[in-house]
Length: 87
Image (tube, rainbow, N blue to C red):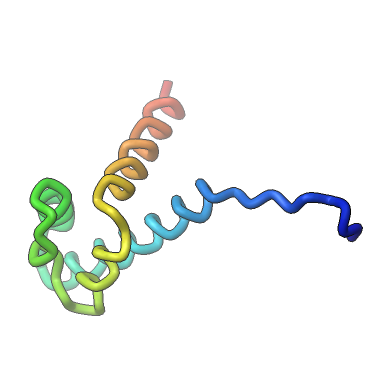
């Protein structure tokens, strides 16, 4: 590797991956505790109140590590991607 080359970092991928990992863990914790994960996550996004998310497995601490607008953006992106795939 030459030191003249510029390294390129894909920040969007890193953010996407981090959000995906957190949502997966939060989803599983909510499901395990018997909650409807969709309703609880929507409640959190709309209100900003982390008590919509169980503390089980550290899920509440995880969800607050990402901004709600960042979370919503990633969810919408994934939904749009699925729509595009199914055309």
